[in-house]
Length: 440
Image (cartoon, rainbow, N blue to C red; front, side, top):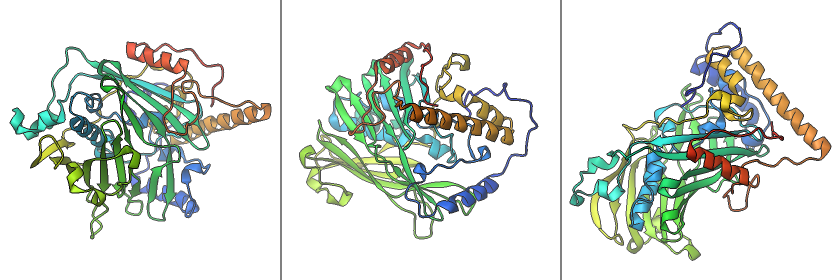
């Protein structure tokens, strides 16, 4: 993912420098973080990291949730409500393969008004979950990751924009018209340094991912994010662990999933385990927040496994096909992040992520770290100058593609320009005009 398809031929003439090793980077990072022990939210603190601690990846590109877009577009394929919930869970466990297959990275901080857009061309489709998992339906359990070719690739389009800088919030919108599925939400994190690790949590405006299935009467799913810990700072090897609870709810079908991520084992070894329960619930009296709160009579299925390896499900008391047999929901071992299509650099706008950060990216990829830091500081200085100009003139900046910086319900809406931008993406057209008012 980092550096994918990013050109380096425009690097300025400067000597290449010795690349710092990971342990050296982490020592530098620890030295910076120690200044912020006890700070409630690192994301709200204004401090600039040296460029050599960053990966050559824009933040908006890094957060896409579509590392396996074929699992996203398959959520609405079944006519069975339980199977659609299971498909939403399959998507959930495959959406962030970058954390399973690669190291944690620190991308560039997004700037106000910066945006990113891309497409995925899905040329392999996954079957409905129960069709793949149930031997009685003529399929082996191992076929849950099996695929088939569509007549032509199915396009999934993605648009995101940084709508607020303090606090840092970005809005995103995903659409696949051919499969009648849409997703949107806000990305915002809150972070706290504990002295040995960084705890990363959803911010106040981050209500999770909202998925709408147009072919099922606008059936909507809300998927909330768990808190995670970035550890290994003292050992010199970054690791991610999750020990929290998150939820997937569908008010229309009255089906809810509680997922419990389990903490490290007693010897400190990260287990990466997850367990969960799928059950019938009352959207008007949603009081079940823990797996153990759910009565057995309401259980439709259970989840268990490792979120970095294999995840299984069993069918419960209230499901249409009760079975104690354990079925494979997804196997992450053979899966890797899918490639995306982005506009050629000359076709990108000046505040489009890859073009906006191209000078920093080029210097980093050419190991010109001092030059990269210089370009990064120039970008940050321009951002501060424009913010000061707006404040002095009393002008309030507004997003271009979304109707507001945030909303009370966590679901951003597209402006007219946003709709036209997405329609262009769906058609495979990259043309956009420069905005008169750029945030950064």
